[in-house]
Length: 353
Image 1 (tube, rainbow, N blue to C red):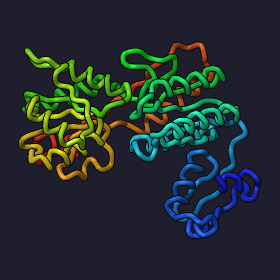
Image 2 (image 1 turned 45 degrees about the vertical axis):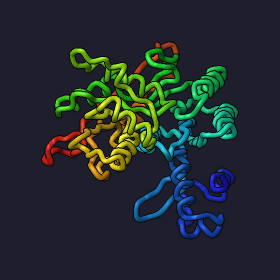
Image 3 (image 1 turned 90 degrees about the horizontal axis):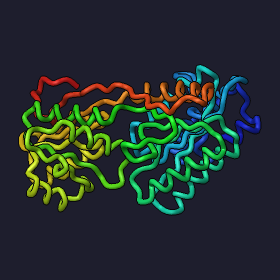
Image 4 (image 1 turned 135 degrees about the vertical axis):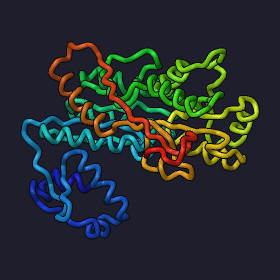
């Protein structure tokens, strides 16, 4: 990245004010959106700081600080990781730590190799530790995650996992994990649907999802009603697949859906609209995450809010603790969530959110 090179070369020194976004666009021949994304990456890495009403400045890294790597594929596609990264950057800045941000967008064999390249680059730089959100949503994700973890373990670099484990639920890896209690989340959301009158809820998840979804499904199973066969109530398909949703509505006759996350819930809501099923009068929907657009959907979404910034801050504490005490057993550090009730679950218009 050219801007990083100019900082490393001393063209812009600690304390210098950087050119404005408008000035940087013609210099590098890119759009303002691209410049904003680059500056955001540099801010997370701890190379610059942005002061409201003043501008962007090169930051002086404390001599005692560590250099950490963030390996978060699809960062711009999964909304919860943006505030998690902000929490990491905020907590890290207090100790003078800096961060490198690796965001290989996955989907093809070449992009899978890019994820491995980022990992190897981190190793060559001799970074102090890696915050890793294991890859999901692609064929071969388990093999790729294992290869990344194996490389970092061989280099003796501490790893803190964000949101999800690299091992299939209920197994776990040898690394600390910071997130939420996903089994409890699935249980809470199903119980909430049932309290609102749903008698035949279904859990909906996309294929090739992370182990967190399997834990949420297990929590959904925990909240069974008498004579219910919960394994018949799990649907794995794309929520935008109208044929699959139509078939499920005819076969399972659900009056509610617990969705693996808010993105799945939003897409399902559109599919049900197209198929003529009214939300929430006929079908209730709940999600998990509370992303920004959850309250902006046609029917505002009831969901479980993840404490994303706090997850990031706790991840830094876990990393520093792991570096100081490498002999400790691997830990699951699980933060509490808040139920955000809106209209999609069928509760009255007086609900919170």
